[in-house]
Length: 232
Image 1: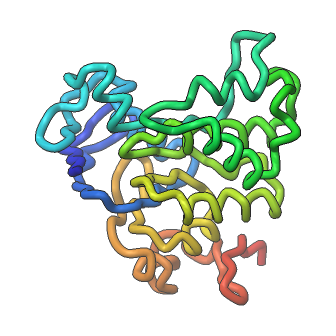
Image 2: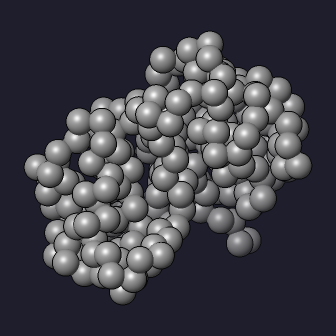
């Protein structure tokens, strides 16, 4: 499956073009860089004529075909039904051949099986993040776009998400601020700044010290294979 973004321009984006073909990608950039806007364009949550999937405009796909092809997992779980519990919410995500058995496996892998009967409105922000992430895995679309999947998570849970991403066989795009997650995943990197695509290339080249200095100045330093804010 091939996704082509052609000269995407909105109030947040400026002339962004790239092509992906079953290739895992990390999208990096500061707050307001346009990462989430770009993701919404790619799944036609914002009407546009900039994106094609296998040569067909994604905005013209039927609802069924689009659900099979792409899924956007937002950075925050928003539930409007105060009575729905975690298990009921995840059952709504059993699409494209996924099963209850897979749901049980993912709950166990993320160590949130104890939340099954908990109201989605009453769990913590970190627990909600994991439930939302699980729903994205269960949707089983050809392309899944995860927006900040490790937000609100402690270190142990970030590792669980990283492991699940590595094991998940589907085509993935991960939006993140976490340079360490991006580095460990090793995916192709798209880096946005002020709505412009400043870097599109390999993970190895992105994390080359000269490139990091070009993009971040002296604000980032590498210590024992980890990237940290340089408070000086």
